[in-house]
Image (cartoon, rainbow, N blue to C red; front, side, top):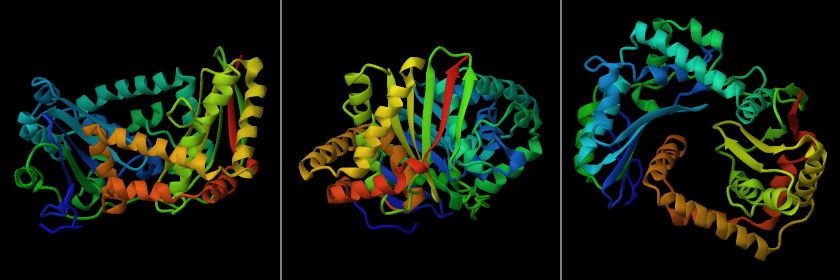
Length: 415
């Protein structure tokens, strides 16, 4: 066992086969853990579109020693929860449980991650479930708008493709396709195990060595071509909907760019989760012309995307867009005062501290940080970075990324 970094809390180390571990001690009756596999939909070849997500579903269809029903009942029967999700660059298998059932949860995650059989008959049935999931997205104009904007910003690139795949691609998958992708990505150097709970370090390490010793040592084989083809596009489509749905999107900092910290703060100020964000105050509260308006920032390892979403009545759309343009212009042209920015920094720090109070969120954040940066920052280190951001840096990233010529747009209008 070799330590990656000399941290008191959380503990950070490697298993004997190279799987990285983040152990966050928490004095609670509940534990949370997850296995992150650093492989997602962008790692698919074109003919594999939707395969990472298909495998995520297949993990629950039975293992060498459990049927699909036994998999689903193993933790649920003791009041715990197990689930999984697929993202653009990662897949998670995660669980929450009473501390007394930690062994059961870890063993179950290991079993489905390492011993799933991907039974052909079960996988054929699951195809219909995933196709229903795809159609569910099509019934939600908000969900579809974000899917289509990704494709618009990243055309003909794996990041731009839907995580779910298409009905045609899902129907085409065979067991051999599943196993090929699975063996390519589910290897030790591509895994991080994150835990938040009351179990001691030595006990947790013993369980992880016991259940994950069989993971093959090696690095994943990625399909991650560079992205260079962004072009500004403006599209307008008629849909069977009642109101207009509008989105704008542009490239944004990736996970390793220094100005991502300033951009995170900027996004939080403009359209983050708080009700007093600029877009909500100016468009919803002041003018009353939208129920939902927000901004989103999604950074990846080598690129990022920023977007603004708005849903409003068709006759209010132009007014809303002018208000958004005005606020973006103010961010570019007029720097915040130190006092105003200090208030926004305090807000962001409070939000991050509240997120840390959730063991589940902390578990996910620690695992992702370990995979991307191979380290965990303390909360004080995070606060120090936020406090160091200047009004000039906020204005600089606003001008660098939120220029009118940078935005693509997509609008759904009622037929």
